[in-house]
Amino acid sequence: MNDIFQDNGGKLLQVLLHTGLKILPGREGNDAVDDAGNEYELKSVNIRLTKSFSTHHHMNPTIIKKYRKVDWIFAVYEGIELLEIYKLKPAHLEPYYVAWEKKWSADGDKDINNPKIPLKYVRLHGIRLL
Image (cartoon, rainbow, N blue to C red; front, side, top):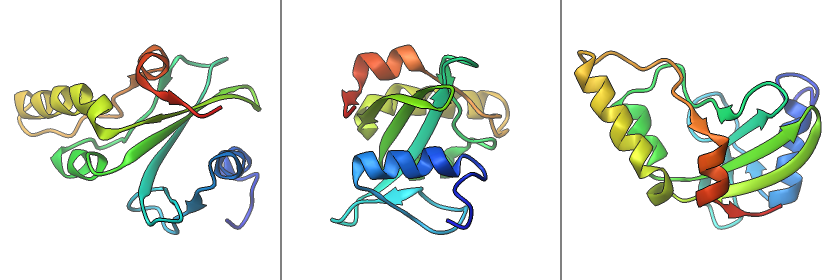
């Protein structure tokens, strides 16, 4: 991490410190890894701006296949204050994966632009870590 204040670096560092995860280098692939080698997708939201988590700007079956293999960590911020952290297992997110696959196929195999996961869903189904 070259500059912790660039590209949400400070927030990312805060989540890593709370979860004990380590960053995976590069922009492709998953975001973090634990000491056992399990990889994670990390997402954050600023509830002053929106109530849903962004996912991927080119959602397609290849990305969904990757997402199905890992747990997700969702960090909830109000401005720069970290309020909550949740972990969701792939099974928790399966309804979204199925819906995205159906939409992708129905739209003629066209990538979906950044489908969202509502904060309400994360709070309801997630394992609260903070």
